[in-house]
Length: 112
Length: 114
Image (cartoon, rainbow over all chains, first blue to last red; front, side):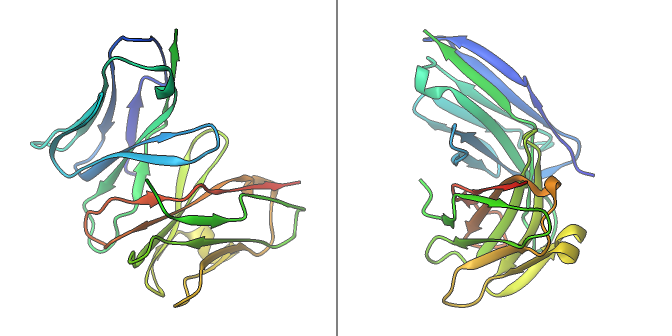
């Protein structure tokens, strides 16, 4: 089936540092969405991209517009409240159904 | 962020019992999705609706689950006979359309089958 490979699986960052998460897709994807899941299980949508890049504060995401086979999430100046589990989820090119296929998640810990 | 409402937040059932959970999508969102997230953080798409009609569902959902999105009532997902392996977080999401659209997720119903 369609696969979304997310890396790294876990990441520990000191406050104030930068890092990036990546998702590779085994097939061409129509769009990608990035989420952060908090300790209560709520999935918070960070970005939706059909192409190009988007930025929101210290977060920036990019979706490879040419081959549509990977996406990245950059975290700048990491803060304690950024801790959580991050998921990418991609939508395959199919007609009439935009179900998401999720990556395995990245557990991010920001430490003082 | 999201205005999708899911109830109950927690559900405990014995094996063989029915387990029913509900979802109210964001206002104006005709498309509703259900996903299952297990303890290993693996997500599984279960079913989606556009208004009251099923767009797609997986085999497991067709055989063991009962789901509907009646007009002017919450959507629901019900496991007919709960199994231990059904213990998971059930997430409902809604979106504006079946094209490429952001999906907004509710807080989930955490089901424990004893």
